[in-house]
Length: 298
Ligand SMILES: Cc1cc2nc3c(=O)[nH]c(=O)nc-3n(C[C@H](O)[C@H](O)[C@H](O)COP(=O)(O)OP(=O)(O)OC[C@H]3O[C@@H](n4cnc5c(N)ncnc54)[C@H](O)[C@@H]3O)c2cc1C
Image (cartoon, rainbow, N blue to C red):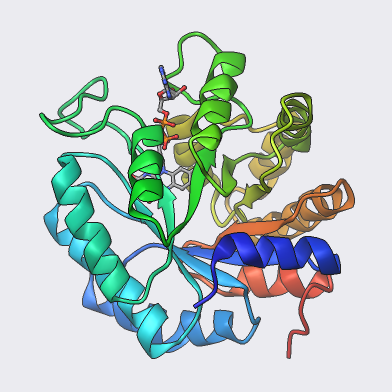
């Protein structure tokens, strides 16, 4: 299993963009079978540099995350980035989960604070827990042996009342604690990413800033996602989405075309790779990666 920091270093040295796919652990047996038997082999055929696995807030969700991480790392033998949050966990419990990830062969962690659980309006740590992701980064660095990523928000984090710039300063601090790379929240206007890229240059932040791209599959779903994270849907895209809203196939095609244009612009301006929010589906990502010529799609 490679350290993800090394994958980005190699990518930079060879000029080859690093491609990664984000998965979530399915809730149902049917979803699980669909992922492991169909989508995963199709995604594997694209030879991604790594997969990442999201982490949920409660008991069974966490077990499913660990199970998917095990399947990827042990059965599929691919580089795996395990997401980990600080929600409802003491520092000691987080260390235990990290021990389980390590035993599963995982050497890469995306260190997240996580969103407040539904019953809480604002994030509140449990006693002995962490308030911010940077504390998890510090723990991982103390433990050693992990390559550590963090979340970045080109439009600013939705809960940061002081605004985008203050959120970016928090990001700079989190990186200063020892993060090796940052992956962005989804966005649809590349100017937001370029502005954050400029901030990285200004502040001398050397770590890879990896754009997170979501291929749109449905207008309703993307409106829900953007409302949750505060990302903007540019007016021109909203208009095109409205025109195809009743036609699922046309919406998927629009999502592919839009993502291809976005990725072309990002890679043309020095993005170190693309992290695809593929929502456990292979079709759109295969098309995008193929059209960009990033991998041979058979
Ligand atoms: C690539 C990616 C993957 C994700 N995966 C998951 C997942 O698997 N599971 C999940 O539950 N969620 C996931 N999330 C969502 C994420 O957990 C939420 O957005 C969460 O609200 C913020 O997490 P963070 O790690 O950015 O937190 P932090 O960096 O701790 O920031 C949280 C808030 O606190 C502020 N802040 C940070 N440091 C300080 C400080 N020192 N002083 C004052 N304020 C501060 C920030 O500006 C921000 O508003 C993901 C997000 C991204 C971009």
